[in-house]
Structures are given as structure tokens and as C-alpha cells.
Length: 214
Image 1 (spheres, helix red, strand yellow):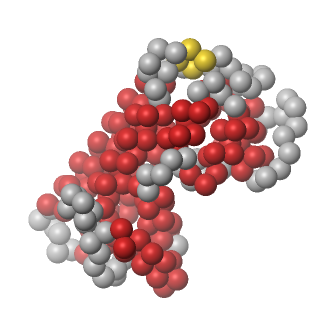
Image 2 (image 1 turned 30 degrees about the vertical axis):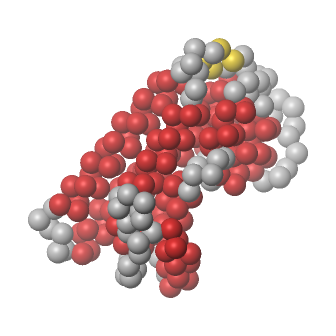
């Protein structure tokens, strides 16, 4: 698998999410707070799912044999070299369970949250692809965009006073304002460049993706 094609599709998905985000903020319906919340929540979820899909594909494809953007070919690191085997290893590793030879998983619903940086390190170690060092340095690196995106998205999915209160832990990273709905965090500002928080998250995702496929 050519990792460049995986990266290209991901870039298109993020570009679409960013475009819709800007359109919502400029919309003449911006005074309709409920419509705005619905749209922003959908955009946030789309971006997070796109990132999780990218991490899944670049990790699994790397273990099945891949060609990096730099032109390096890596052989398969799992046997048999099929996604069901790689998926099984990821599922078991994410649970801290032992891995049985030749066992498979064909149920996507059982797979871990691929975008969760706290889990991906162990999964990559278990799959042991030839570009594992590159994947770990980027997918489990220090950029906070995916983690913040995940936290806000989870607060939207489980919208209650506790999840909303937990969003206050993100405030020191931004020029923050009151949170009536979790999507309000998307329009906080990055103090370094005044960029909207959501766009700073997608910027981090792009940097991570560009590095991971090299």
C-alpha cells in the first residue's frame, strides 16, 4: 500500500471539515445557536473520525507491507498479512491481553479508538512494522490537537455537567470563554497565532500525518 494515497484522502477530508467550519462561523444563521451547535458538532465528529481512520489505515497498512512517501518499501510484519490479523493484534494489545498466533478479528466495532495517542504506542510496538519508529514519533508524539479534539468530541457525545466541567482543563491552552455547549471550545483562540482552536487541532493533525507517512 502506498501511504501517500492514504495521506491524500485524509488531507481532503480535513480540508472539507475546515471549509464547513468557516462557513458556519460566517453564516447568516449564526444567531440560531441550536443550528450552529448541530453543525459544529457534526464537523467536529467528521474531523475526529477522519483522523482515527487515517491512524488506523497508516498503522495497519504499514504492518501489511507499505511504501512510504519517501519511497521506502517495508515488508509485512504480521502473518498472515491481512488486515484481520493486524486488527486482532490491535484489539488484544489495546486491552492488555495476550496475542494468540494466527487468530483474526473481522469486526470493526471491536477495534480500539485509533486516534487515542495513549493506546497507539503499544499497538505499533505489537505490530512492529518496518516504519514503526516513524509512526511512534508522530502518532504518539507531543502535539495536543488530536487529544483536545477527542476530549471535546467526547463531551459532545456525553453532554452533561461533568464532561462540560472537564473541558475547563483545556482553558489554559487557549484564550477561553464561557462554555454553554461543548462546541463553544472550537471557537476558543490559540494564543500564539489567534487561530480558532478547531483549526489549530486540524493543523496538528496535518503535521502528524505528514510525518507519519514519510
